[in-house]
Image 1 (cartoon, rainbow, N blue to C red):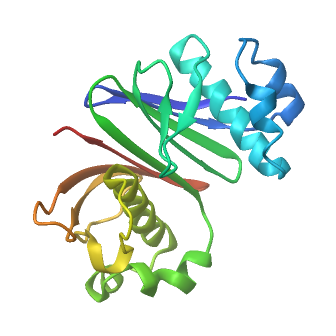
Image 2: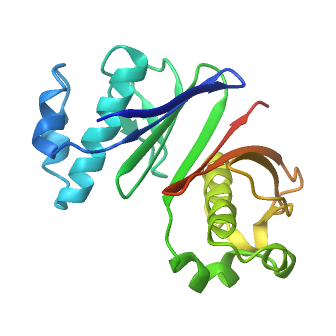
Length: 208
């Protein structure tokens, strides 16, 4: 399970791993007395079990110890020891995590697929669509809004109506600006991204 990338951004630690092991191999890497098997038994899909294990092995790699992940009723993850705010994402063949001791963090990773073209009109404004039809650009837009959604952690958020990305020039490693239009606060998000041949990844630290 090679560590593909690890970096620090605004005091947060982010990491991406490419998952190459089987679920059995990953399970053997986890040795702490935590309820792994009980939680795994509730996941019927082999793909979900693999994602579950890969995230926890990655977390152990970046923290130097195993930590128990639980979830709020909204689905948002948290560490039961309260040591960090945590964000998690997974896609075909990859998992990503982000950690910050003080602020909320969001991360999203998406494998490259033309499927995003079929649904782009459901989550992008016309001016966002006009700027570029490149698949990676569309995926960065989608991923950035997923990251914003995770940070907001609210019900009823509509990607098209409530989340806006300022048009930007796609780079392999860049930044874009996001705004939420749902509340009077209209929170601004400074979103960073990677656009690789195999995946796009976006992340943000909400330092407020």
